[in-house]
Image (cartoon, rainbow, N blue to C red; front, side, top):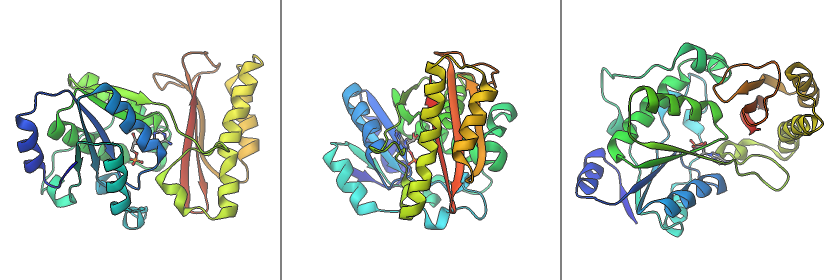
Length: 273
Ligand code: AMP
């Protein structure tokens, strides 16, 4: 595995490349969720590039940029064990200069849900993903369905900017008890972790209601909120796959999304039905 830290070096190495590249962008503190993306990329491509970059522009003032979990050495070992070909590990000064050109997420999709409480978050995400995709120039890039709104906006960006990369969505990996894996789970104390299980319990309840043919979004949301309380709820929403609110669940075209705060930690999760 080659470890590369500058975009120039990366471009130089990939310039001669004729292999089909699969790309997995991450912010590090790798877990089984990231590993499932890497495994899929390994299966479907001849050369796999993983990036680890905690992108400052997608954090708002007061968020956890400075204490975002970091385990560089363990991450390198994981990438080595997963047979990653190139690990790209840049610094912020390698990625950003002065007077930056940046992308703006559309109001409707970028500013509902997470965007409402984190304005400009998705501008930062789209800009860095665009930069990374341009540096790596992959055939396919892998993103988790766990960050459904991020995935949706990246798919939209690729379509609207006529980019040629294929975006591959990957299912959410969970702990045995249902908690979705997240780098931020390390912030949770044991009692908070128990509280956090309310998220997957509420989603399971929604899915059970739907299997009993209860399709009314209002009824489902009400039940979910009851399970989640007294956690601070940022949103519980039922959307179609184009991210429009729907009154009734449409099986095969629905995403149910939750974001809550447990202690000081924002946790999000969703199910695709
Ligand atoms: P992050 O390092 O949190 O920016 O995540 C990097 C990629 O891994 C993103 O595409 C995430 O959606 C994806 N990811 C994070 N957690 C999970 C999970 N539990 N299951 C599957 N993919 C995940």
